[in-house]
Amino acid sequence: MNNRSSSRLDHFLVSEEWESHFNGLSQKLLPKPTSNHAPILLDRGEIRGGKTPFRFENMWLRVEGFKDLVRRWFTGYTFSGLFSHILACKLKVLKQDLKKWNRELIGNVSSNEESALS
Image 1 (cartoon, rainbow, N blue to C red):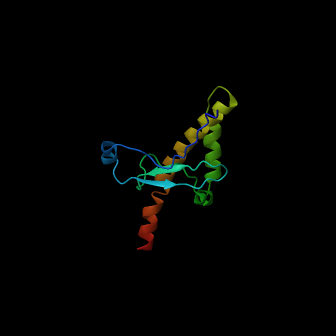
Image 2: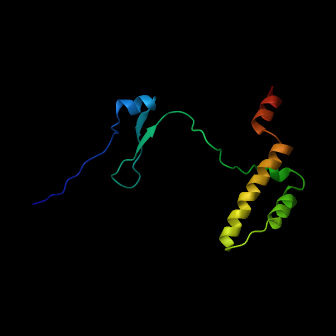
Image 3: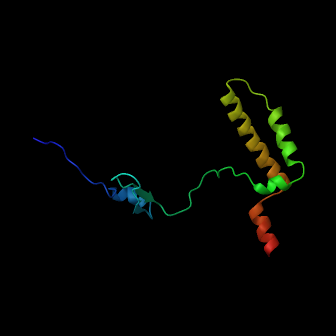
């Protein structure tokens, strides 16, 4: 006797209370690249909040002395432990220094661009 069963999950089941708390939901079936399982996306359709990811700006490379500044910062950080831990700590501190430097020297690129265009 074959006790094997199969099913296809292609939607979410939620309570009315849950749906009223998270309004504007939609379900989207995503492409199935390699298997017969189709992933499902439950989307609120709005921009997600939270911290913005760090982005290195290529324009920083054009600022005179930038590479020397980064080199000086990076070699000046001192941490102890395994090499991977030291590298992770240095990169974390470097990210903060770059964000601060960018704010002080360059400012908000988006608003500067809007001002320049208007």
